[in-house]
Amino acid sequence: MIIDHPLCGPRDAREFTVLGDAAWMDRPDPAAPDAAEAFHAYACLRANPAGVTRELWWHEHGDRSWLVVTRDTLSHAVLKVELAEDVARASKAAR
Amino acid sequence: MRLSALTLLREAFSPERTPVWRTPEPKPAYRVIIVGGGGHGLATAYYLAKEFGVTDVAVVEKGWLGSGNVGRNTTIIRSNYLLDGNIPFYEHSMKLWEGLEQDFNYNAMVSQRGVLNLCHSDAQRDAYARRGNAMRLHGVDAELLDADGVRAMAPFLNFDDARFPIKGGLLQKRGGTARHDAVAWGYARGADLRGVDLIQNAEVTGFLREGGRIAGVQTTRGAIRAGRTGVAVAGNTSRVMAMAGFDRLPIESHVLQAFVSEGLKPIIPGVITYGAGHFYISQSDKGGLVFGGDIDGYASYAQRGGLPVLEDVVEAGMALMPMIGRAKLLRSWGGIMDMSMDGSPIIDRTPAEGLYLNAGWCYGGFKATPASGWHFAHLIAKDAPHPVAAAYRLDRFRTGRTIDEKGMGPWPNLH
Ligand SMILES: Cc1cc2nc3c(=O)[nH]c(=O)nc-3n(C[C@H](O)[C@H](O)[C@H](O)COP(=O)(O)OP(=O)(O)OC[C@H]3O[C@@H](n4cnc5c(N)ncnc54)[C@H](O)[C@@H]3O)c2cc1C
Image 1 (cartoon, each protein chain N blue to C red):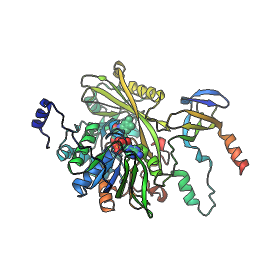
Image 2: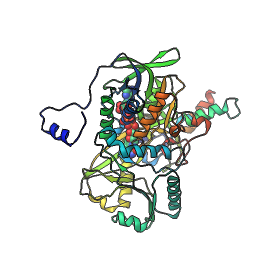
Image 3: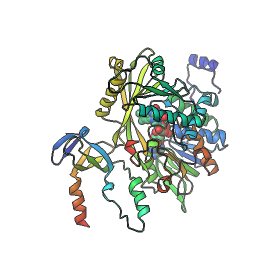
Image 4: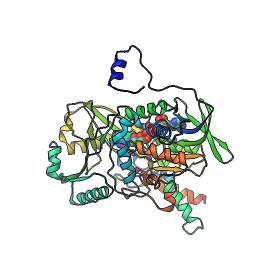
């Protein structure tokens, strides 16, 4: 599997470790009244789609940046690679 | 027909093959439908009929019986667990394995050739001593071997490796292997003989609802109604349960690969696992070395893995038993597993009335097949869990009662 890193170009997936579902970037508000329920869903429940999914990958043996990788779990095709930083900034701006 | 040496001889010389089970048309309704004709679904149907007197049952399978993980695994059976929620359950499974062939009158080639986990440091030996003691406290057999004890069993291992010398191992003599396909076939035949309809090539595409409850399934061969519906679809759990309205579960699907060498003369005495890397190996009755290691690490439904894991596994194999470098790799494949958030399974009712779930088996569900079927059958027949499987609740992640053997937390790719 080749990850097309936005800064380093195409890199072998072996240079990366996978954290998992990119939903991990949207941490619930710990002060919200439904925080216990929200954190349970955040930590333990997964959509686990058969098809397109977004995951956090870490370029451990590279520039050590965090990436959001959009992949197809049925074919292993990598569809899109973004810097997690950019994704976080964009979602903050949208809010 | 009861199978025996005589029937084997007669069938061998008969020009016609007697089918082992019927291929019935689905009836409009059953008391119980089991979705998934893998090991767990077939075992559930078998025990429903045999132990709990429920014979009006259909198993609905999208492909052919045993086309999923039950025919893709590396066939290891064992009950060497550490935690209270797990040990009695897996030991129940081991006891069922020990009487299985007589029970369902089919040769499943259950072979208690021993499972040996090697340790390579003092800390690891302490951890194994603790695990062995936990097993013994539950009445499970466990022996702690020193390096000489291991040497007597497997002299070909790389004992004096500078980085990871072999210091000993934890041995469960009653562990071993079984012929995976035959386990599926034996349960299928036993269920069929007791009146269970095995419906193949029928993919479940939706659930029937009546008020708030689940009242059966929609399949590619039509709608089938049922009083109670049990789902046992392993790696496809999230897909199937989403159709019942459960779009988020404590499960992520991952691919695990297995590798087999050419057939060789008997050399590996049982199952051996490496303690310093992810590698385990046994030898099939045909002579092939059967081995594997870690999951690939990223979510997958593709039923195939990548080369990096092959390299990892082979490296660990070479470190542990350098002679393996002389064997030729014949085949490899992947299977999709339902990795749960604590590495332990789920056998429970669901919030939807009439719907029951059996899932989260990770890479260790083959050994659980008999007990999983038995306890899922108990749950469905009585609408209540048996105490031995009562800890496998769906809501344990909310309540904090997780059963995390590795102590990893909610990281499915690390269990
Ligand atoms: C490479 C590998 C090695 C393994 N090694 C071991 C081992 O050594 N020891 C061990 O204990 N465990 C092992 N496992 C794990 C074990 O194989 C599984 O946990 C276990 O087989 C899962 O239960 P099952 O047999 O019911 O699954 P499956 O055989 O996968 O059954 C699920 C069935 O559901 C069907 N299905 C899915 N969707 C639908 C639908 N919509 N409608 C109808 N039917 C559907 C599938 O076609 C399939 O037949 C291994 C797994 C793999 C992949």
